[in-house]
Image (cartoon, rainbow over all chains, first blue to last red; front, side, top):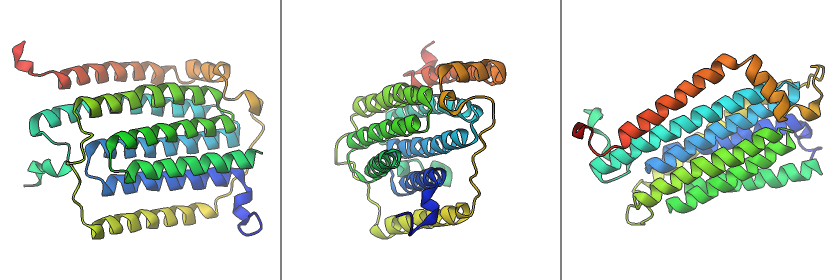
Length: 108
Length: 170
């Protein structure tokens, strides 16, 4: 495999590639799904892809700061999910659906 | 050996991530996301970030996913009659757009110079331990740490306020 793609011999580049793939899967999930919960989970997927990249660079540069950044991203993601799911519960209570197409009042 | 583990974990991550966005039932989506997070924890161990691997399992796979499952079960969303009606064309366009994003990202990153710098005082094996991370967290990052506690407090209050049935009762 290494003879076909010389970049793949670099373990750091492999993680770069994996993070890009997972991030793009998250983007596709946000675009194609209409269920708000799935969209939230796709956002979590994107955040995790970025986390993986940060840990990779932390390992590459032998620097613990990158892992501390991942720690803070996890904190912010947890807070975001808490508030987001509370908003989701409220939306479901008011509209009876979790489809994003029901939330088009601001569209005018 | 490490290469083999990386390939296995990567295949698990990508397959479970694809399951998350393409499976119909939200419960199965959440369970696939749990599998993805566990494989991420494996990646972290491969990258010598032991503490983050444990935090990943506890916080993401343990807490956040349980929150998602609770919301899905409380709202009773696992019925299949709320199928999403989105035309095949727009789905295909979205997938193509995502693949184009992937191609442009990889093309952008292909020429990047990834030379590890190894002289940083700490040995590379105990960079992810609680000791090293704690030292950094409580010396260089004390202010962000304290601010994140305020963030959590506001998130808790916000969630409670949003989750109440009717605020005008009080």
